[in-house]
Amino acid sequence: MKVFKFGGASVKDAAGVKNLAQIIKSFDQLELFIVVSAMGKTTNVLEGVVKAYIAKRDWAEVLNGVFDAHLKVLNELVDEHGDGHEAIEKIKHYAHTFLEQDNESEYDFLYDQIVSIGEILSSKIIAAYLNHQGLSCAWLDARKLIHTDNNYRAARVDWDKTSALCQEAWGKKEAKLVVSQGFIGGGDHNRMTTLGREGSDFSAAIFAYCLDAESVTIWKDVPGVLNADPKYFNNTILLPNISYREAVELSYYGASVIHPKTIKPLENKLIPLNVKSFLHPEDTGTLINKNTSEDSKIASYIFKENQVLLSVSSRDFSFIVEEHMSDIFNRFSKHKLKINTMQNSAISFSVSVDADKDKLDALIADLQRDYAVLYNDGLELLTIRHFNDKIAEELAKGKEILLQQKTRHTLRMLMRKRG
Ligand code: ASP
Ligand code: MG
Image (tube, rainbow, N blue to C red; front, side, top):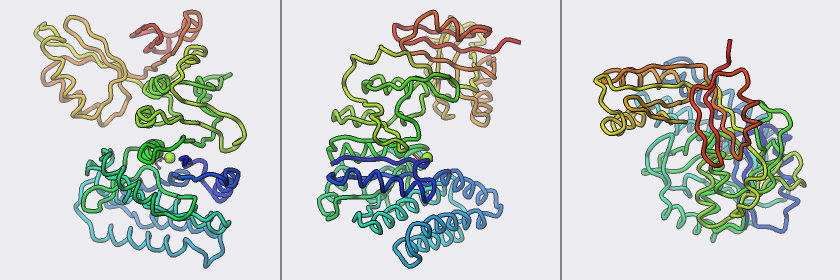
């Protein structure tokens, strides 16, 4: 069997769902496990519902808008009494009842109980349409397949339980096709959990791992993994084949094409990952597997805007690394700030992080109780894999470099535009 994952952009409207069905039809010999994200920007809208609810603003109108939009798509795909309508009504009823009853739960818990609806809705609609097209498929509930802890918004997978649940469900199903959801899981007491934003790729990898899939294909709106984000660079090049290692490095440095957690489970079982265009499904795209021989052929450029450089120094001239490092790291972790680059001198430790204002303010206030803290904002971080000096020089032209790190394969520069 193979796992196919379709992200929000690929199923953003009725035309997207029809295109998905077209792709599935062209693989009619295969047993497929289809993982779908919420349609378009639904997850963002549902986040807005939760925020409004917490702030005691009107949430019902926005929530109803989500259901109306989904019903509209469904009506374009199947006739009015076909499958799917009842499912959408049920989900709507659940959401209203839940929010009307619950008034005091904390944000992360509420978030998961509401935001996970996006994937339930999209998968119900897609399953209804595939069945309507004669592509008989089973709808499986990812909350009953991916078992997690109750760490809401960043739930951790219980791999043994998840493997057993997936295998049992796969063994029982009769259709050749299965449709399930990305991003969501189930914690204890049947609570819904989510795996972190953009986590549907990771879900696809979890299902593939647990079912020993032959391969995973992620269908995207780009031709595959490119050597740079077309938003920032002209003349991007498709990477036809990279290793798991290279893919992990690229996504860690900020290439957004695949979710960083996706690679590990696949690498552990040597399951190949294809990244292909849902607009041009006949094109080969990118293959990610254990072959490392192509990795250094093409340089890749990863650009991160809105970086802040924080310099944390001891006030009494004590050495930073020996005496304070673990304390400083603990505070970063407590405020959930991910470090992008780090460097130390005798009494000071400098790190760059994404400019997430709320988290940063809290972290800086915390650090200032014991350390001197300086910061520079409005910076950009450029990472070049398999760099050559000439290109690096060109890209840094006219910019002030505040921090630079070079290893054999990777060059990183934290820069500010001059003037
Ligand atoms: N729908 C979720 C999100 O937008 C998960 C995903 O798309 O991968 O974050
Ligand atoms: Mg998405």
